[in-house]
Length: 168
Image 1 (spheres, rainbow, N blue to C red):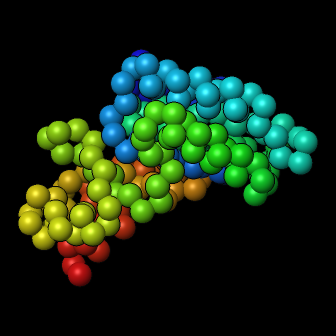
Image 2: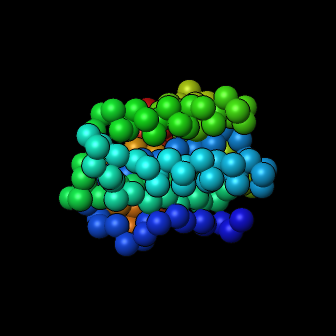
């Protein structure tokens, strides 16, 4: 698979579209990536909120990140529909032995590629000088396509919320 793989009109969704970012806890093998994307694509084909279809799409980036977006102006996702997405991802986690739904993770790029640590581990790495303000980090807290398009997802730690790790 390519560094970026999309399903549906991901790049056509408006900037106001709701965005969710999920990161795989470890690098995934090609057959695992294929399984994840097949399951997510099948889910998106039938994703509904209160019986109405959602206009949604996904993108797979760096062999680690699943980005899912839904155009709320067409049909807003409901709590139950979002829970269904998370449930689908949790099933994949059990099947593949990895984590996709992890709100406490910190993602960054180093010589080994994309890495995941918890917040305390990130702080330890900054204290040890292994992570610097120039280290490229990923901000999984974005919730809108506009932020993704504006480059807020990936960039130097000094320009993201991660900067507080250097000044604590």
